Image (cartoon, rainbow, N blue to C red; front, side, top):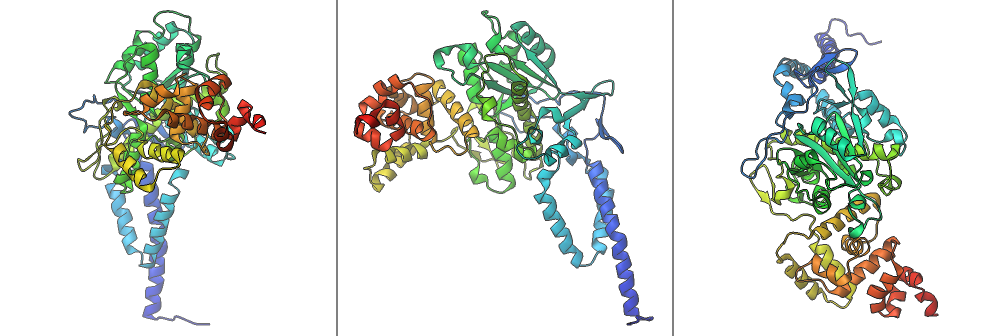
Amino acid sequence: MMSFGGSEIAGNALRSSKALRMTLPLCRWAGQALRMTATPPKSQTWHPARGISFSSVVQSPNLAPQDSDGLDASLYSKIRKYSPSNMQRKTRKLKAVALEATEIIDENSDLLTDEQTESSEAKASDEPPVPTLPFRMVDDLFYAAKKAPAGTTASYWSYTYYRGMAQDGTEQKVKVHYCRSTYTMEKVCKECFSNEQILGFDLEWAADSYKWAGLKKNVSLIQLASPSRIGLFHVAIFPEKSDMVGPSFKAIMESPYITKVGVNIKADATRIRNYLNIDSKGLIELSHLYKLVTYSAEGRQDEINKKLVPLATQVEQYLHLPLYKGQDVRTSDWTKPLDMDQVAYSASDAYAGLQLFATLDHHRQQLNPCPPPPYHAELNLPIRLADGLELSTDDEPVVDTVVETVVEATATVTATATVKSKTTASKRSSAPKDSRVEIAEDRVARYRATHPEALASTPQLRAYFMWHNQGLDPRTIAHLLRDPPLKTSTVMVYILAAIEHEKLPVDKERLKQEIAGRISMNSVCSRWPHIAAILGLAEASI
């Protein structure tokens, strides 16, 4: 047996080992203390049993007015009040203790610290989202959802996981107001939403809606969400009257000082403009903020653009739970009284947009340098970066996809002609889109969100929805999509390809008269066998 005796080397080794054992708990204690104090100040207090307890004041942070001249202020002017980053002054001593303890540990511990840091970053989505609003996600409910089997109802994000504190100190759930008349909608909008400065906004409509089908099929359900309340305004079952939505809702949507947030929000605004004569202002497209925050943090500013990002993708990344987007509920009948599945689905969509905006804006403020927030979407201005640059991007650019599909359809174009057509397309002026195109693009975005394996391209689906849902003929569609217009034959190919790839429903007589009847039977049978079967051409060719 080896004996260290009174060796000085042995004594130093023992003292170093003892110091290491003492400093490791100290580091853990300091880290825990940092996490405990990194909670929203003033309006919240830490309770050892309950965790974070909110003050008796349940009120949404104020939103600074936004205009095109000075927008460097945060969209949520008081969001820092609820942000953990503001606790730095209160934790300096704890940081100093942690730093001192870390410096005592030998070089081998540095590798351990790096690994722990990487592990912490990799598992960030396993923790509840950063609390940025008075209503925050309950930790126990979050972890229960994380442990639930994937794909089950309990595993999805929901507004029911959020809690706040009422003025009497009792715990408060998010309230849902399901309004089935103009009178109750006006009352709820006036009392619950008119004084808010930021709202989640969304629409639902009938799956079989056509442009000529009228208001109730094209704007079936309107959703608004504040931190404490969700309004579901079921316009489809409102009694018929001249003023279907009342003055308070109109004032909310037309005010530039009440910011409305959502995904593909301009298309929703186009619908209520066309069917309710409401000119919406103060719109924030969450996809723009998502890309600004995500790609700025990763140093990939060149990838920032205005292409839409599905709400479910954004929620899972920043709110750390998947968002239910089941096709059975999404395409259900929104013109009849809602069942509980429809209530939960529509309420969660609007509330997710609100919570997502606050979380994204918190992360934007943590960036160094910090980029300004996006302009209101209706202004059609570029996305601004932290260094003062502006990205001159169009909404959902589709030039390359369009040209690529045109080349595929013609089949005889050479590589040189392809390059020439792309160059010509890039020089075209970006005129404002027709509302019918925006509505079709919104439909495409929703379709792709529920059909991630879709084979049809965006131009093909867009042309199909304009033809099938809006009742437009191929020649009109060609003129609406581009100036100078696309070839009518190209639009026909788009529509046929969408039907063939996705097995979409069609009006057989319209298909035969407006499209298939103008293309040779041999071409239809060889290129689109599904369509040939619909029209009975397969049997005729035998």
